Structures are given as C-alpha cells and as structure tokens.
Image (cartoon, rainbow, N blue to C red; front, side, top):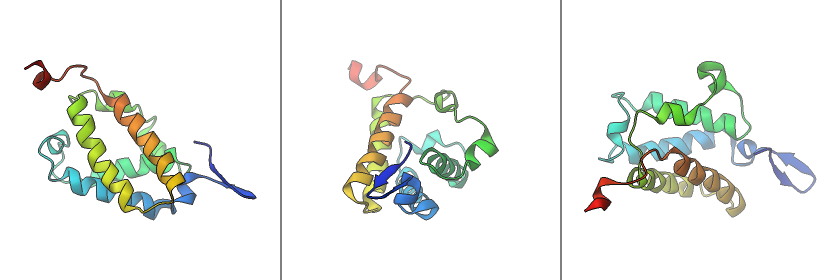
Length: 139
C-alpha cells in the first residue's frame, strides 16, 4: 500500500493508524490469543512468543510504510518459505484470522483504516495456506 490519502495530504497507513505503538498493540493483542490457542501455539517453537511478536511487528511496520528494520535484520520477507515447515490449512488459517480480527478490533480504528488493514491480513492468511484438504473434513 502506497499510502492513505486524506484531504490535502498523503500519509502511509503506518502513520495514519498511529505508527509503531499501534502496530505493537495490534501484535500484542494477537499473540495474547495465540498464547492460549491449542492449535496455533505449537506452531511457535520458541518458549517465549516475544521474538515472533517482534518479527511480525517489524514486518507489518515495514509493509505499511514504516522503517525497513525487518528487511535490514532478516532480508526479504519470503513469507511462504518461512511458513512452509508448518501445516497451515483452513482450520489454522481461520484460527489465525480469529485472533487477528480481535486484535484489529481492539485498535478501534476508523472504518476505512480498519478495512484496509483487515483486507491485507485476510489476504495474507489465505496466501499462507499450504494444505488444501483438512484431515477432519475427510470424515
């Protein structure tokens, strides 16, 4: 996203939603849900979710027009490659989206900003799916 246009000025979504503090709050809220989710928590091998939260925060900040710290520290995001070791089917995607929806809602953003953020997060979640059929659906 190149930016969110306001009358007479243009700013990035990063700036429009409140910069780094807003993205930190988003990710903290998200990982508060993940921490107790029996399906998603095992996908985070580190005992502490802090490093994963930092990576996601820096990625989102960069994606939405903030500093490029993520790429400086980790290189190109390569999201599908980094998530390939984990089984991500529809159930995992939906659990991720559930926690992220709650986190986005907790930011209490203006509808246009919330919609832009959610649209990306939803598309990203669908993009990460790497298992086309869920064993539970095979009955």
